[in-house]
Amino acid sequence: MTAYPLIRTKWSNEHIMAALFAVLVLYLLPQWLDKPGELFGFAVLLLFGLLIDVAANMFRYHKPVCAVSAAVTTAMLELLTPGVPLWGRLLGVSFALIIGKHIWGGTGKNPFNPAAAGLFFMSILFVVEFPPFYAAVLLVPAMLFSLPFAGFRPFAAGGMILGMLAAMLTSGELSIINMLSYGVVFWGCLVITDPATVTPDPLIGLMSGLLAGFLPLYLSGTVWALALGILAVNTVSAVTADNRGKAISLARLSFKGRKPFHYSIDEVKLIDAVGEETGYNGEMPELSSDQIMSRIRENNVFGFGGAAYSVYDKIMAVMSCGSKAGHLVVNGVECDPGLIHDKWILKRFPNEILHGIDIISKIMSFESIVLAVKDGEICHVPESVKLHKVADYYPVGAEKTLIKEVLGKEIPYGAFPAEQGILVMNVQTVLAVYEAVYLNRKADTRFLTAADLRNKKVQVVRVRLGAKIHETVEAIYPGQGYVFAGGGIMQAWLAEDEEVIDKKVNFLAVGRFPAYKESQLCSKCGLCRRNCPEGLKVNDIAKLVDEGKLKETEKLHAEKCIGCGSCSYVCLAGRNLSKRTLSAREFLRQKAVRFCNVK
Ligand code: SF4
Ligand code: SF4
Image 1 (cartoon, rainbow, N blue to C red):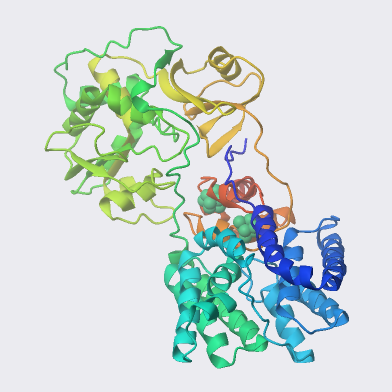
Image 2: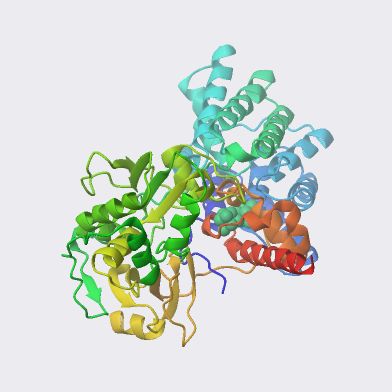
């Protein structure tokens, strides 16, 4: 079963490009009202551009589709090439779409931005005048409309606006009317609206934006300088983005302000499908560390965070690593935006968790004990425990990421935290340790999060392991809908009819199937790569998977994928990328097992 996110970013390439097209049309409208013949010429150009895109997509992907980006490229060339005859523009659009978009890769992380490439090509063949930007009334809504797009690349957009202002200042042409007529804000936002032509890296983005804004205006205000300037900084941007792969991949996926559910943790009520007293009032029995370990083993305490490891084995691994400086990290971070039960457990059972920490510290001594949370107010801890509030991004709760955040230690791929004396335990696991030792209770029930994706409702549920997933969900949220199970809203799968809740299930949900496009179309925006916590070249892996070349994904280290789903969430083309990277990972892991067996 392959897990994938049940939510996706609201933005898509089509939305961005459609809004950008609207901005361009708003800007061009006064000119068309003045000379209606130009509108006819644009209609011909637009139809031609769309047909070229359809033909190219038919050739490349065997699909007769055209993207809104082709309309945007056409409109930009219409705007930027006054005085060029229609046949010249048709040539320019052909060059932009065939060479700039389809051969060189698309509107995304592509040094040859299609419109700029077409513009440069046309400025070689024709005398292209610098377009007269009018401070028309319709420019105001166009500018305002384009401003939010600067949010995609704020540093690059800001740099470009500053660069253009600086060029005007240096040439003694800085005035309100010039700012409007050169379209400082308009261009600053418009050019950067190609969401990934310019890198999201703040420093490179700022520098690229400054150069792209400054050089064309300062050099001569000619079209070729404008096109060449944009192409040059895009090239620098793309090359440096690739070379700074690791730094770029530190982009953090945040769900602040766009949580998938409406709830207040204080008001969340427990739905108890187990029907037993929780009975968290036990007295700590007098037990030696061996006896404590026996209770942990006999009561089958496992990792509740999703890994389902044996806690007994994990503690033994840390004890046998020989490291003198042991660290205990209690993971209360719950990074998946769909999970709420760890927060709820921390609120309801703080004393039991602290007792659980005491028990673990009786078995072995630690140099530091850290309780990692997102909300520092969530509970009070004794001096022996350090409350560490971590940054709110996804997937900060992943074991190695959390260790880096909390202890500043990097655990390389293939190595285990236990080898460095680090024991990481989820809060529910610590609660289970407490129950196993204080109450001699088996770890055969669990708390999890159950969500209704249709109504954005969410509950904490206590279930028995082995309960049927469909029956459990139907009892909580009666009605029609697909039933999902998994590690969270970012890592879920469609539950089969007879599937049961096992140790790895943290999340149940009912709702619609996520609207992924099983398309191979990729704009090379690079968002998937930059949001991959493992720094993988996700779109390249996905391409190999689509072509059935699973073996070749080894070169791109697909085995490192942690299945977080960030790539599928951010993909502006709506592709389910984690499904592809996980299938590559599975293939490589099985290949490794086969190789070991043969040896
Ligand atoms: S490829 Fe990267 S972003 Fe995508 S699921 Fe794997 S680790 Fe997460
Ligand atoms: S696969 Fe990656 S590069 Fe391609 S459109 Fe999706 S996020 Fe952008």
